[in-house]
Length: 181
Image 1: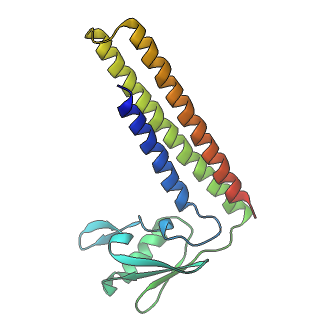
Image 2 (image 1 turned 90 degrees about the vertical axis):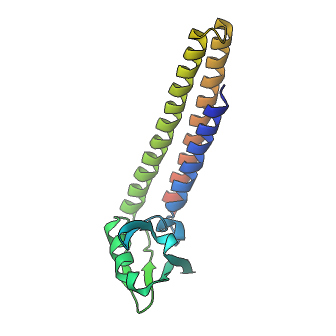
Image 3 (image 1 turned 45 degrees about the horizontal axis):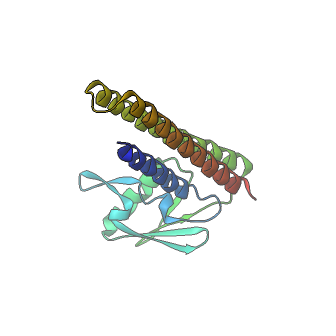
């Protein structure tokens, strides 16, 4: 009965890991921009689906679209994404220099990591609420006993507490990583 909830919690933590990977504080990483959507032939498409994204060095990303007419659309989408990157268009690519972080920018990234963390915790709480509804439904249908209900609720709370602890640890580690000079 709690398998669905465990799966949901694991997906929430995995999503948090993916979001944290985009918050690279000191070096260029394609994950920073690959999911930014651009208007490509009338539909919003992630950059990773229409271009090759490479790291030239630790501070520079190169985006080479397969259709060269998309270069200016890509640059505009990156500028509009409010991720503090300044793309430079070249003849056949877009270059992005990842600037060194200031103290203020590091603090801003920590705030963003805390927001991602809170989103993950909300997802875990939602999974708990859904599971509690399932337990109540099973109890009302006389599929499980009162003792089973208490047992499931105890196991569920333990899963939620472990997930929240892991999320807090991940956030603390990411914040330390960001603030490290």
